[in-house]
Amino acid sequence: MKDEYGYVKLAKKAIENYIKKKTRIDPPNDEGFKKRAGTFVSIKKDGQLRGCIGTIEPTKDSLGEEIIENAINASTRDPRFNQITEEELDEINISVDVLGSKEEVNDVSQLDPDKYGVIVKKNSRVGLLLPNLEGVDTVDRQIEIARKKAGIYPEEDYKIKRFKVDRYEKK
Image 1 (cartoon, rainbow, N blue to C red):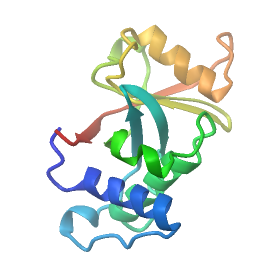
Image 2: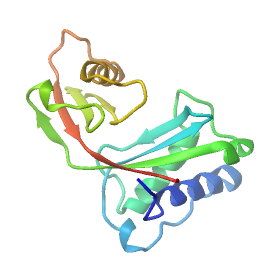
Image 3: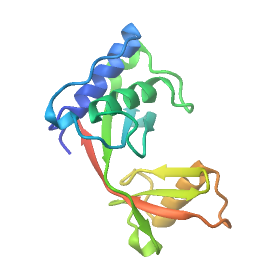
Image 4: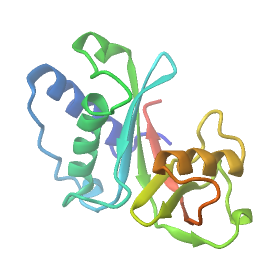
């Protein structure tokens, strides 16, 4: 989806400012940034994931604050990657996913990895996988990845929720 509200622009500005100056920018006051929602900020370089951090439910007072926080964390705190460097800033692509409402799933036939993200949960262990990801073509694969993220074994019982996202990318 085109970045009609400037979500990607805000994420990029937050990342650049934090990497260069170690300071946080203020969120915009525009109407499109005032609602609250969980968000994920994904960073790619040369088509490969370089960082991705997000929140299932909102943790900040506004979507603008949520995007800024997750953008900074995706660029500096994703444990799978080193921090983004100033030299990389011109080489990265950013997308922002705004999560919709979560729905309980009673049967995996209600899932579609292109349309819905999944949340798997067993007690305090939670794994999330966004929808429409390259290389995730089946429901079984989607659940397997989310389960592994949560540390849930295949033989354990767990609950599944699905959700849609609005994905914003700079085109």
